[in-house]
Amino acid sequence: MRTVAALFVVAVWSGIAPGQTKNNGHTLSLADGTKPAAGMLADVAWLAGNWAGPGLGGQCEEIWTPPLAGCKEMMGMFRCVRDGKIVISEHCVLCESEGSIVLKIRHFDPAFNAREEKDKPTTFKLVKLDKGAAYFDGLTIQKTNAGCTFYVALHTKNGLREAKFEYKKAEAK
Image (cartoon, rainbow, N blue to C red; front, side, top):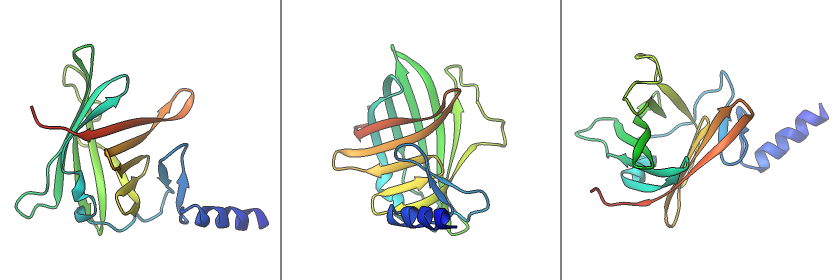
């Protein structure tokens, strides 16, 4: 019992609430059965724009649109280019759902074949919101002085590792 109490104190002191666990690095996980954190698109509206920087051994770019005509969604695109070729692209949606924000992603290979089944996008539930940061289950987006940084928890055969994408504002070309 003492160990559980000590872990609770450490979690609260470190800014992790019950139902949240810290992955390696900068990402959090939402425990099964835990309700996602409250949030609205206005909390992440700063993400709208063009972002570019290194990641996954190549050059990456993300483009996020603001909500349009009262729609409760922001649409995003991602691509990673290595040696002049796209190695992966994504179509993304940030949407309000049941008082929270959900990030949905569909990954595509260079031939534009979807990795996920047609009715099952990869979904990231909101774990926590801070000023200038959104912590989704396994993915964190942080506003920085220079731009923004994405951290993604990747499950590999050797365990969990974190990918980091440091972006700066970029002009559409």
